[in-house]
Image 1: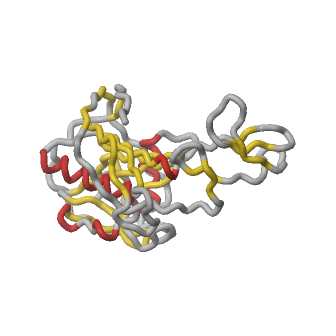
Image 2: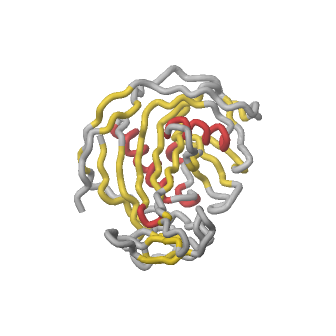
Image 3: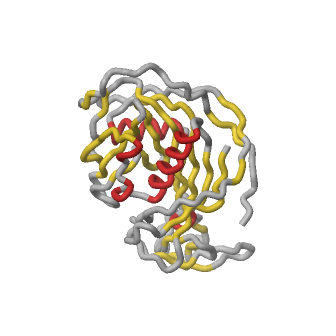
Length: 273
């Protein structure tokens, strides 16, 4: 499969190391939202990588039964129309190729689109900040602070907000680091490199713990999602070569694998700047 190359305008800046900052102190933060801090834009071109990363699967948390969607993705069964409340039928509309939920009363079509997940990979003194999940899915497993992007905010703003909510940390976005598409579950992850504005962090309601991990101590066997596994592996590769890159890839599940298979995904079509 060939992925079309594009030129992206990205927030980015040099990652020159700053002098060591004070030791981090875990503390409770005020409940106000942090200010958004971003940097200027540049253009990035991409090259294909031959590397492949295997990863634990992203769990499918939706409660409705899937139906065929005309592709490798899963379409949720929508039983009632969101506009008039009428019952829906599932079929391929005229002139289209995918299964849709169509209202039997008003005739409107419910289109389902991928969700955007945004988060931060926070660097501090050659360590990264991880949160232990206090909610399902993947309760008790480690993740980067990340979550669904909200209406009315940019991807970077959403990543900063999620970091505040899950890790109690005020961060400054340095640059975009990775976009990882997961077509089967309809999610796209955008992860930013970031650094803390203040040397404090503490778990929010959705986290039971927050810790800084050296790269050699990252708990890869206890990570929550395939996207986080791949992101951290790519970050370690970049640290080894001594420069940050922007990564794009598609996380695909292995055919026949079960949701509990911790090595069920691979990274396809990996491009990097």
